[in-house]
Amino acid sequence: MYDVKSSNAREFISHEEIMATLAWAQENKNNDELISHIMQKAAEKKGLHHREAVLLLLGGESGKIFEIAREIKRSFYGDRVVLFAPLYLSNHCVNGCVYCPFNAGNTEMPRKKLSQDEIRREVIALQDMGHKRLAVETGEHPRHSPIDYVLESIKTIYDIQHRNGAIRRVNVNIAATTVENYRKLKAAGIGTYLLFQETYHEGTYNQIHPSGPKSDYVYHTEAMDRAMQGGVDDVGLGVLFGLADYAYEFCALLMHAEHLEAVYGVGPHTLSVPRIRRAQGVDTGSFSHGIDDETFTRIIACLRISAPYTGIIVSTRESGECRKRALDAGVSQISGGSRTSVGGYDMPDEETRQFEVNDNRSLDEIVHWLIGIGYIPSFCTACYREGRVGDRFMKLCKTGQIQNCCHPNALLTLQEYLLDYAKENTKKAGEELIGREVIKIPNMKTREIVFKNLERIKKGSRDFRI
Ligand code: SF4
Ligand code: SF4
Image 1 (cartoon, rainbow, N blue to C red):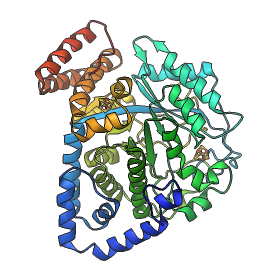
Image 2: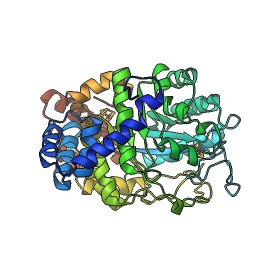
Image 3: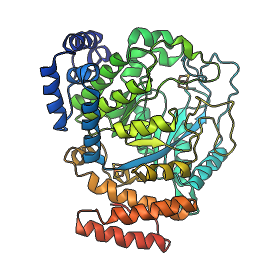
Image 4: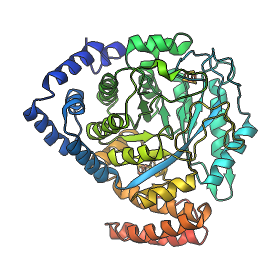
């Protein structure tokens, strides 16, 4: 049944293979010799097969796992952490997802859809914070958010130039759709197409998606194949932890990544690891698979080890303290200053939010905090704009060369942020950080270019990239 290259969701995410993997890992989780062998392989930074990864997750010694994960993250991405914000366009939705307050049956939820003028106001508010990279989100609704509305909204976002600001990368998180629509998204210039599986466990999936187009497990699970057939270069997978057994989800997530790599020659660009959160009209107590912070960060570390070349994203669903642990375990992108309501940046509105935010700090506070804990906040969007996408990106990443771009671009975009948006204390800490970091750029030519461009930014120019 299991076939990594199959075009059938039930074969590339084979339930039997997952169960056999879990059983094998349970049997071997005290097999020190085997685990030590997998640890050695992990340290080579070339990733792990899903069976090895699950054994590591269930049986590996924590200290060693975190040490390898940290080392892998440092050697591929350095200390930069990319920042982004979600932008909710509409909360009208025809689906019945029981874990989401936007579900069609929630009559208490005020429904809202942004007009193009309202989108402009949202984007200006986001630009005034300093954001350059957005993840556009919308509920699924044939009348309120058809593909043409999404495309028009993307164009509106890219067209807005406000003071020194512009959104330079729009990632899109919309419902599973057709190859033709993915082609349209690609033509609109999207960055990553994001679609979370929520759960790979088909029985659970069917229970928690009782109605609407999303209730079709196979159509949803095969969406990334259609996206890639439609020419989308970068796709982002994700699981909503808490819906089903975490080891099952972890295994399936890696199998999905292996499938994309086997068929299209390039794995997912990012992995997202949201955990289920309290929200209006959602009884989170009815989900019995919640995971604690320790398991959560262990999952992140094992993902970092198993898929070293993939970005890992954690949102403001998590508290600041947990996000620090997640960053240390291998997360490379975080959201900051997020609002999960429709129109919430321009007009804060608690009633229409999708989930409760646990990290309520402003973007500036997040930037200041990242600097203080030893990371380089980055507003970089260079790869997508330089055509370093899909397999071209992965090639650079696998050879470890991407850091030669990430590090200088983080410094250049941080410099822009400091001049245009930062508060005084952030500015001071950021300038000191840039001063310390710029002399670490190993390539002399790149270092000179960065020195020159930092000066140009100080004189008013913007948007340099390596
Ligand atoms: Fe709609 Fe998405 Fe919420 Fe499901 S998770 S109800 S598809 S907005
Ligand atoms: Fe991301 Fe590429 Fe910028 Fe690195 S250089 S932060 S991979 S966009």
